[in-house]
Image 1: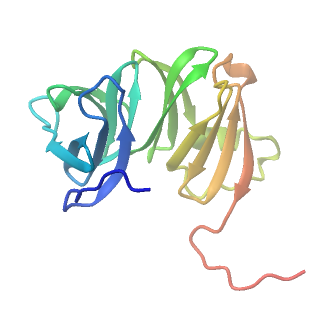
Image 2: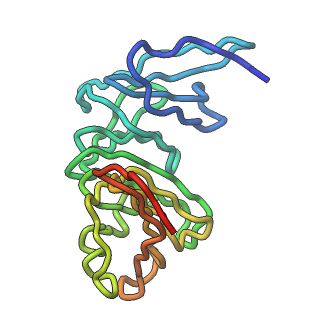
Length: 212
């Protein structure tokens, strides 16, 4: 049943993300040139506008996550913004990717502890520690060319979504080219890391018929 409701920002909203129980604001949302911090009072949701401030540039935000007790968002410019959740403003920008950061996901049950996975329009997937230091970088275009047989065609390696399993051993990567790849042994030595194509769809052209 419905616990609470409120009107969101008039601009397009691209994500909502739960924060930590001890924080004043239990939920954040963001999208076109805005970030909102939400609190719940009985059946009412109320929000305050986040500020980009001196450390950030006002821009669209595509995704958010909480890692190492820090709230982070993925930006159109390729930055990851770290937010001061009590001051409601950007405290630190990190140059994470060369193009839009489309997705962020956190897993705290891996063999390496809590990790953050980011995916970008630049075709890179990065794994970060809970102190926001890069642990591994995967170039989808390059890994496709190294796949056995060389029969996989990747129309675009722009990453639109990522997921990591509970043990942190495998990452699923969805691309704008309608493909889903699995990267295995992502936290192990690079020589045993492999990528497999799980499925692919139609990208630029229409499907008109099928037959058996």
